[in-house]
Image (cartoon, rainbow, N blue to C red; front, top):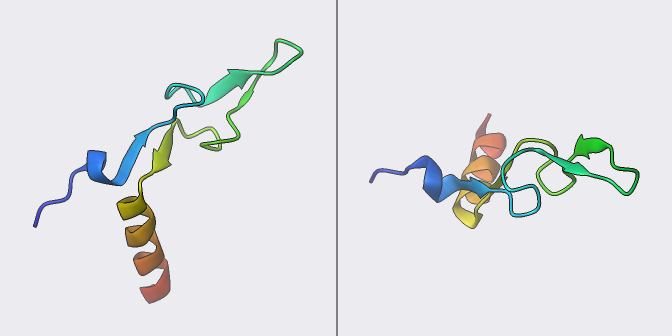
Length: 56
């Protein structure tokens, strides 16, 4: 079974993968949805992360 990165994470819909958004004061801040990473985990990605954390 092969798992690709697209199975584990997607581009953040809030910042469109940039990792930053403009706040009300027109300043660049880290995106709160992806915490500045530009990607969010899929359900499969969350499951894999939970498994790894549990066994490490």
